[in-house]
Image (tube, rainbow over the protein chains, first blue to last red):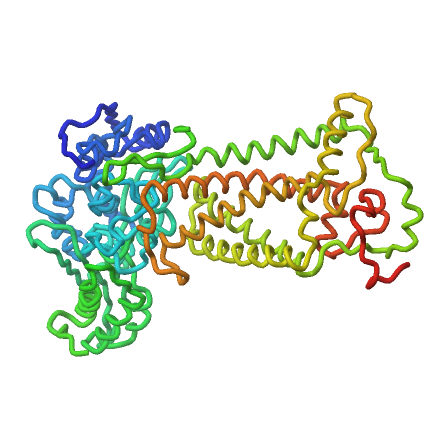
Length: 338
Length: 278
């Protein structure tokens, strides 16, 4: 069980100097290998001795995976770029402030100094039953300890739960979805690029993973197209402790307003399901409408359609409704009257 | 045993089984394919012409219809519904385990519910409408199997008699399907309590962790067993000498010639009252 031992089990440490080399090692060792980015997720698993990889591939020595670069159509962020670097980057701040806001709200300054964008979007679920090493669905077992009348499920899913009710804990993921980012992976079959929303998967697809990375795959970069640069952004994160916590829920939206109506919009939430959810129904419903309280009301109602609360997380339904309403209509118009 | 069952420690410190080891999927698939190859090779190169001890049925033939009714419409509908649900269950259960990821569980439990309903129908249909005992091995089947075995090893014994409605192999296969099928259904119905469906209120604590674990193991073992059984069944269905039987599961009848060649009219008495004699 989850006894902190602090002394990690023995493993072979590999420190490649290029992404090609790293991917080859990962491919060679398959599921025996563990990718170590900033270590903010990994060290919990390793010190608790719940995950016991034979090979740990430390990416910290790969310079090509670090930094923010300008490319033909937008920017490319190396997967090993720290969240602090991202927050401080002038291009990100000026053009893609949504991502800067989201990254700045991740955990604490110390964690942002060490944690990377690749690690933040690829981190594992934080459900404590799972993290404690119990044999739940996500750990390969046949039960969810959180989804029962006595389970501690205040932080868990209200949407798209399928046996497992853990949620994705990333703050940057919904921002990247709202910015229509592309995730670049190096796989045994070559380079693969997917839309941000397709990088994440729910338990109905694979109950043991939160993303599509398979053994042998390596996330190398995230590309953000310029199409949403300088749009009207909104990011809000609700957490128990404002100084340092995972999101109970967060919302990210990018909106282009023209002539007083919403011309284009992308909106995503996280903390509601096992994957960050792009709210396409909301996008379709509010396009062409004024970004005001009335539209926000409609958006909020649509966002929670199909939500199923557990014993202790019913509060997430009005919370999600309000966050989406605020993302559309603005904070000043978010008083709930319905 | 530890190698074929995956174990885990539950929150109360108890070591419990959680499911089978998934390599058994490959064991079942490869085992089934090996059987096919060995059987096909044997039939092609080593098998001798079959001999039956039955008398000349010439006296019976004129009274028989040209097409001998074998499977009623209800029986055929059951078979194909069961086949569709069984294949759906196997694909949805095991494709994700071998790396093909998709939203499988909804299809799986719906197919399981269809299979369960169809089997319940079959039990009543077979018990009260069909000839219930025709699918169960009888004394003659066992005597003839013994004779065939002795002849196979070169002993001189009288040839076996022709089959009743179903050859012994069919009957044994049915027995295996009954065992595997009832195991997956019996455990699967309770497993529906572990997921959210429209059928039952979710109750993951219906049983102890140990009981649940054993249930998952039995479900898995019977499931991988069905991989092999279904492979064998499909192979047999497409073998040239069995096509008349397969066709009868589609159209409901087989030719009088095939019937007289393979079956003993005294053991499988055809009801000719409603069939035109040609």
